[in-house]
Image (cartoon, rainbow, N blue to C red):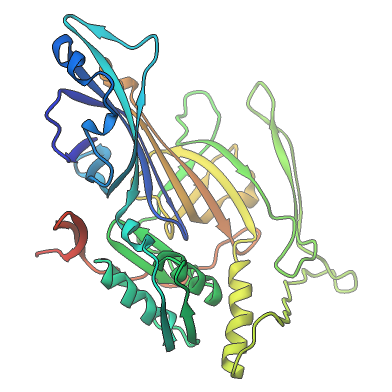
Length: 386
């Protein structure tokens, strides 16, 4: 892990980094930096705020990952610096250390600006491209059939406005650096499909340390579809209890009854049958991931919204094995500068499925090839040179 920007004149080292990526949210991060201050310099800076080092709105670029070849950039801006002083703060000969925790917001921070304007007969994709390009973002937004005539209120930010449009068509709004995507939630944004396993057996190293099914009792129509019971493990590592009730059954034919979703939405007034169909489809899309799970896995910088993962292992009951869609990823990195082998990198993921035991996906999206460039103190997307 390396801070590429800003340049720090004081001697320092990074203690920890958290990076969070989630559908419909700005990317954000928290980084804790330890500064080494000599006694003479400490007298000068005593009483000054931690922004002496990274001031608010400073542009930040952080490269994180297990190796330089498998790494990812976080680009954004300082939102707030927080000085951490404890009685056990380490000292060294002739000086002292001071820890500062910085909260950072991603490159979409400038989309927090509020404005008032009117959009007439526009698709959500057109609005995303227009707003994204104004903010210096690269945009992937396929067209959707629904047309909008809507007024953006003076107190509503560009980001909030786009998120509302995404909800109205049932699509995913996701950010990655200076790339903004507005796509069908079933469309993966990564071709890479990592596999994580949990065996809880002597001699085998698990790549997934925790898993929990957090929902899945009902289907989108509100009827009982499946009931999941927790799995228990005996001290010997054997499965001692696991229960799963299948989807609804037809008592006459003894066959599985698929979900039949019928919706009537009277909250929105539309001008055509096409728009009415879009409203109903959007409602179904918002309930797409009705089987949910959460897991803690070995750190992988490629995990984020739109990534598909495969789960397996002897400790995982059969219905939860297979492919899942990542809805959010929280990367947690701690650095031990004395013994690097004790440094840790874990990722907490929220997962979703549209079927009790499987995942339905569309072809993987083709993302624009860009890089994050700092222009005039602001992060912008720039086409990557061959």
